[in-house]
Length: 331
Image 1 (tube, helix red, strand yellow):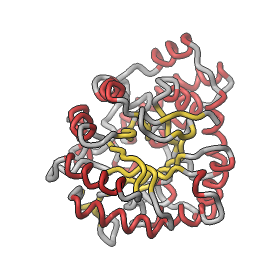
Image 2 (spheres, one colour):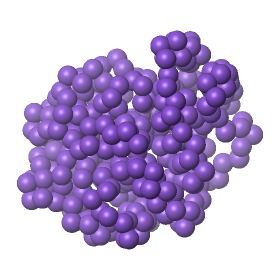
Image 3 (cartoon, helix red, strand yellow):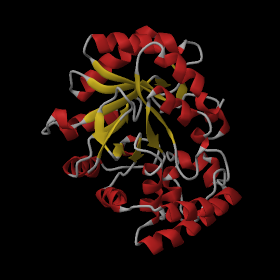
């Protein structure tokens, strides 16, 4: 496993990270035993960056990670935690809270659930429109001074917010969606992050399964799977997007790789300051994703991929309209 550094001030992490959300929430049923086994397999393969959120399954994901790390060396894991999303007992969503007192409250509960004395990277999941980012970042900075947090990150914010946050405290990384189907950050956000020395942890590198090479237009989604309302998985949009995947499949076959491996390798090839996060929930999917580390994309390969899936080719927005409203990165 290769190592990359998140920005100029962030931690050294594996060149591929594991996103844990799907093990608890939003992608239908998951098996806890298989989830823990997958986390163990990732650690054994040299994956150090483990990404979770306190609202994934209303705390379930953090408890799952605690169980997975119980008999492991805590220092071999870089734990990234998102906070701030407000939910109810039925799993509903009711906004975001970035007030300083809320930051400290969320952190206290996460530390207890994770069974650790510090969190390596702590970040608001979304920008709270009612709280200046300077106040939210300032509160996390106090927790850095207290030794409870090692680094500060952000998620789904735009270039201006990055600058304002960086003026308060060094930001290690920006977690944001980036894939062959979601390239909006290339215009302004990624150049700004690079100017400021902020790394990028890219989630959605397989576009929630669309770029996995395993998706079928006839796949049925349960009521708890949010892809059931995702525009890219609906009607003609899905047909168009799966056509793009088939174009990518031809390139993958020529490289002796899978579609997923090419999609992950493409994100990794966009710069050493970018770390792809894969959302594997099973060991076989993790094994496939790890194979992306052995895929070397030449200039000709990258050109062919860009021709197969040009920037802006995806049909449909990456979230449904009400959720897009919460993305500072899309303003």
